[in-house]
Length: 191
Image 1 (cartoon, rainbow, N blue to C red):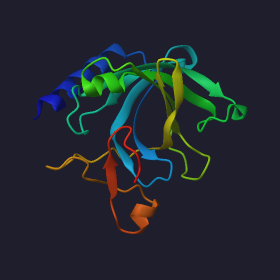
Image 2: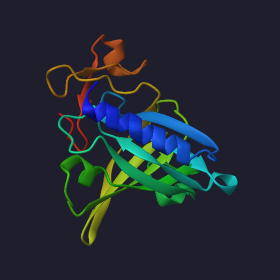
Image 3: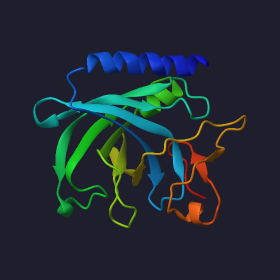
Image 4: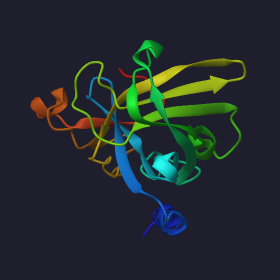
């Protein structure tokens, strides 16, 4: 077993024992807004407290090319996003969380803060029905960075080459064409 895999297992065991009072645990992969591509990272988190008001977990990076850390901590709270906010993810059953992904991936302070919105279920793939989004902030600037759909299918482990093929989400264009999805790095622009 690779050292990164052992580190993630240790983190998950530690997380599982500290979240014994949690109400639910969730693991989702991230698809792009067109459901064509799957990112190399995935989220693992638990919700808990009165009315499941908090979220704690990890943004798992072990399948991404050369991350400095196998996982980035995430922590957040349950919210309801009004449609009038024009956020890609809206309604109830949403959590907002701070994600230390950039610092964990590069192994140093980057000054980039990611804030994510996530649902706790996979939604039907259709325009406007997105189930995750992240916002990036740097200094006084912040912007909608990426958004898309959650998937139960976690990214496939890369072979010897970084950014290799991943399992296509059933019903996506890539699946219909018989072409597996490309596994994307975080913040990688689409072709």
